[in-house]
Amino acid sequence: MRSTMFVEDNNQFPVKAQRLSFSFFIFSIIIVSLLVIGYICSNIVLMKLGYQSIELEKKKDELMVQKYQLESTVENLSSLTRIEKIAVQELGMCRPERIEFIAMLPNNIVFDMMAQQPSIPESGSSFIEAGSLFKEFANLKIFQNQ
Image 1 (cartoon, one colour):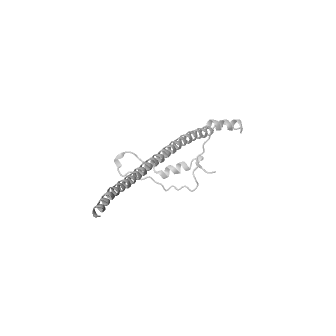
Image 2: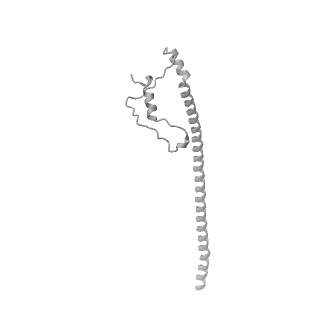
Image 3: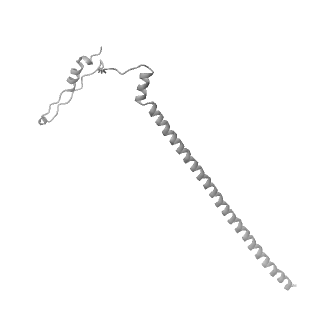
């Protein structure tokens, strides 16, 4: 009886080894399958992002073209020749024959700003006091407030 038991035990040993090798094979197939599926999914995501990037670049280019067109339109509409043409034709304006400029100083100007005399007398150049210069300009008729 004992010899039959050993034979039966010996027969079960290869079955356990086969079960272990089969389960290892299945486990390795599952791991490889998961790795392949992960690789494929990452490639799909990268392709999607690539297509989105291309679409966004096209949209950016279209917006840049639109921006340049709008800038050109703004320049054309705000050109001085166009504005002058509208002023003459539609509003009846004309250019003045003579342009006069009148410069005025404010009433409350302070004449306490004096230039410092140079500390080196050998320079030979003389400086005018800024306050006296302002006073002379302030006494001119064109600078008098009316």
